[in-house]
Each structure stands twice: as structure tokens, then as C-alpha cells.
Image (cartoon, rainbow, N blue to C red; front, side):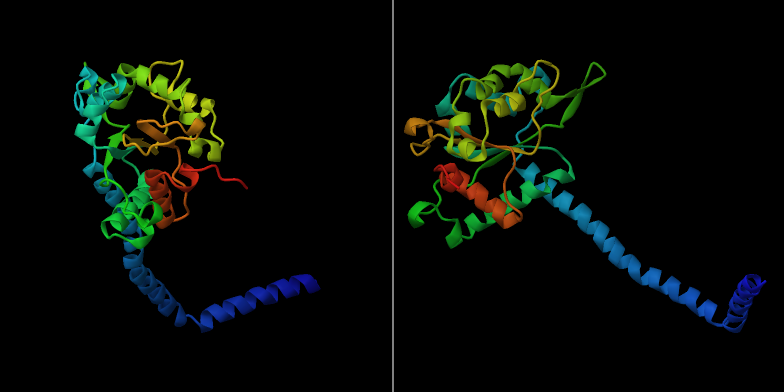
Amino acid sequence: MVVLRAIGGFFVRIGRWIKETAWIQPLLIVGAIFAVIFAIPHIIDGVKGMFNEGDDANKFLAKYQLSLKNAEKGTSKVDELFSYLENGEADKVKSDYGERFFVAFVKDDSSMSDLYGGLKTFKDKWSAKDKEFVGLNGDALKGNFKLYTIYTDSTTKVDNEEKNLFDEVWLTHYDVFEAMSSGNYLDKTYYALNKGYKASNYESAFTSDKLDSCPMSTPLVMYFDYSEDNKIAAEDQKIKGLSDVIFTVDGGSDLERARTLKKCWSHTDLFGEVIKD
């Protein structure tokens, strides 16, 4: 009985409080409404920020885009680059694309924001001639900033069937990707040795038993250097052409990722010597 009286007393007190404070409740409701109203601009700004970041990344990366138009016919600009690589036409590559350049494989989605931030910061720092972003021994970074992007999620319809255009390039120039993955020098570069990459890492990235779609993930960056400075780790061998393949641009911020790209471009640090713990 004591317990029941206690429970009953509790509900009586609750009822009395509601009755006595009824005039407060409309104020609370109105206050809650105003709180929501005032919060809406901040919510919208936050959502806008998320979309703006993705939009900015795509605008920047698209500005350097190599066209995949007509890749299903083997005649796109991307096909042209890989044809040059396939045929060993270094002079044409240098003439049309530059002595040093990045090729970034990307998608039109928000997962590219980190890569975008690193590339844009690197470009901006270079253009501003930031003292930190000079080359070896205080020399200016050699060459001009050059970037080409390839959207691996571009599609087109062929005979009412949706086709991935980069998969078409991959199939057409499979020999190039196979050469990147087997019996080559990439796993012997300073960068690969420092990162612990093996030949199997390149094989799984560029080749597949299923010849229906490229296994390469994005974002991925290739650095090409046709100058005399491109020295790799193996017996101080010099290579003209593809220098490094960066599966993930290291760095916890845009500035740190830009520093990684700078080291790659100038063959320094991880990209120019074996770093011992």
C-alpha cells in the first residue's frame, strides 16, 4: 500500500505541475520553433559546404581532363597518350604532354576531395613561388606544373548498352598496363621500396584475369618524367617515362599532400632515397 501511495503521489505531483505551469508550455513550443528556424541557415551552410567541396574538386579536376570521347572506337585523347606509351614514342609524349607531368585517375564523386586539395595546394604554392616548394638545393621546381586527369567512371551508350569508356581504353591498350605490372622497375623505385610495395601490388592494380573491367582503383596518380634526372633506386638506373605510381597521396592535410607531390616531382625524400627507420 505504501508503494502504491508513493506512485500515486508522484503522478499527482506531475499533474499539478502541468496544470500550474501550463502557461509556460506555449512559450517552450514557440522557443523550440524559433530555435529550429535560427538553426536552418547553419544547417544549409553545412550542407552547401559539403556540396561545394565536391563541386570545387570536380571543377578543378575537370579543367585538366583528357577526353575519353570515342574511346569505344579507340580514338580518344586518352587512347592517344596510351598509344604513344605503347609504341615508345617518347618524343611525341614530350611534345604533346610535356617533359614532366602527373596523370591522375579520378571519379566524379566526393572521394576525390583529398587528392584535389593536394594538387591544388601544390599548384598554388608553386605559382606563388613559396620558398618551401622549391626543388633541390633551393633551385626552382623544374618545368611547369602539368596535370592530366582521366575520369574512370565516364560512360557512353553503344548499341543501347552502357559502356565504361576507360575500360575500353584499358582493353585496347592492355599491353601497356601489363608492362607496368610485370617484370618492370616500378617495384624497385625508391618510393616502392620505402612504401613496401611489391610487384604484386602493381599486378593487382593494373591487370586482371577478367578482361571486362579495369581493376584499378581511384584516386591513383602516375608521375612521368622524361628528363635526365629521373633516377630510380635499382643500381642508380635512369628511366625516361613513368617514374612512380602513387596509390594514395600521403598526408593528413592539403599542405602535407602537396608536400608529397612536391617530393615526387623533384625526386626527393621518399622518392629519391631509401629512408631507414
